[in-house]
Image 1 (cartoon, one colour):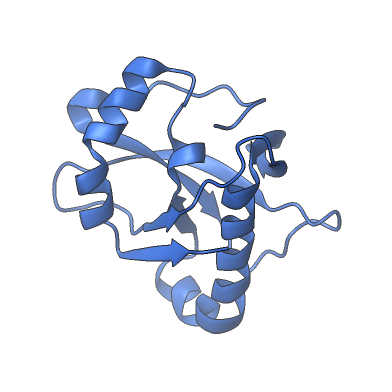
Image 2: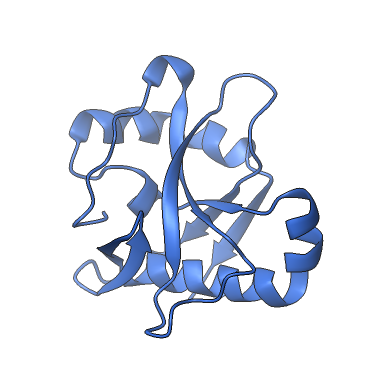
Length: 145
């Protein structure tokens, strides 16, 4: 759950999800925080932006770190922040040039950040869509820590 951030509602009829977006060519800030945004995309239809679904262990729920989402410091589970930073690092060094040519923005789906965990109705709708979220992703990446 991202605390300190106000989620905008998803459109269930369009099968929308949120994805965490960042520019792989832009390094983390001097304080080590990754600057991101949240974007709504629809799983309906054939045309949708490429995104990576991240499968990871939430770990200790009380362990928190920050990301910058939409210009706001947001507390997220430490494992979500660590996975985001590691994926950013790997894309920057290994795939960024190829990725930037076709897809200048990297989109990640991490359930703890992209689902409003405080909204039970949204959470249940999004959990019911998880099969689609993972199956329609460009790649599913596993983060073990």
